[in-house]
Amino acid sequence: MKKKLKTSLFLCMVFICIYAQEQSKSDILIPIATDTAHALSSKLNYRIVKLAEGDFSNPLWSPDGKLIAFTNKGQSGIFITDKEGKTFVTLTNETGAGYKFSWSLDNEYIAYRATSFNGNKRMQYIKIVNVKDTLKVVLVSKNGIQPPVWQYSGKGKRVAYVIDSKVILSDNYPFTSEEFKAVYKLPNINKNFFYKSGHLYLMSDALLEASNAIEGMDPVISPDRKSYIYSFEGKLHLRDFDSDTETVLGIGSHPSWAPDGSKIVYQQTKDDGHVITDADLYIMNLSTKESYPLTSSKAVLEVNPSWSPDGKSIVFNGENDGAIYLLIFN
Image (cartoon, rainbow, N blue to C red; front, side, top):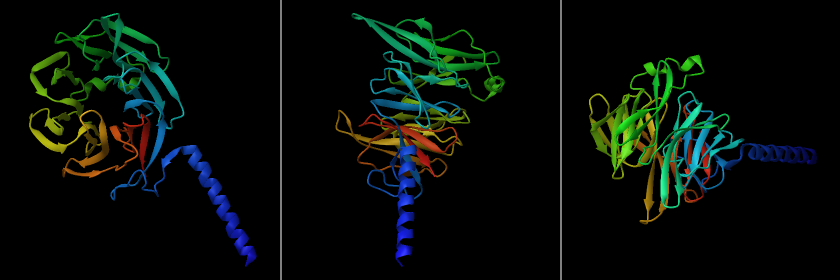
């Protein structure tokens, strides 16, 4: 009996040691078995990992799903980490650089708008930064520029930006990998939006379709490039490019598509008129319009979700603690 007891105690100690080591390796913030911080949805099973601590916001996956770029809460600077949180690189600390920055589809560059001040004088810049070596190129300096997007052709990629309602295209940057050379053939690949004065302006190729301007913000185009979702007056709207038909999906903001286009993740928030006091993430099935909570935390205010390209995880930031989190589906 004593021998069996000793054996059981020994196995228990081994299990505890292994568990502690795994916890240390993966930096699991909230174990699956607990509901003290995040209540698991009855439809989902996941774990959450803290990738970066600081005052960060607006994480966004690279198109290949290997890196995550984010900014700080003042939207100054752009930083990147990998999905394990093992690396941390500062691409830039420039003011305003984190506002609507844009990855190139080949994962090589991020385009952004930066702002500098000389006394009371302000100047804005459109720049691109090489993700591998952090080298930057200034494309233009002028006030009144909207944040840039990428355009694609058989020759490569170019940065598009708007000055005085006119679309300007940068010089061409050839693709260095063969796999991206036909990307321009994808449907609606060059449809993008510019946001100005509360309105969304659709850009097709190098034209700004001012006649199609709609009131709204935070547009995200579907993976098949056939439709898009945007926020207006606290509700999410789904609109088809071809038919221009629209469906009001319900209360929410900051949507992000699942890679197969069947679902979205989005946030619902409450505030006191000044700051966010409550926030959770929700998932909606777009075929049934059924939605259900993904998180229900009181300790962390989950905002700004971004669904990974492989569909296996969602990155977001805590509004109250400024940390970057990775929610991994099991």
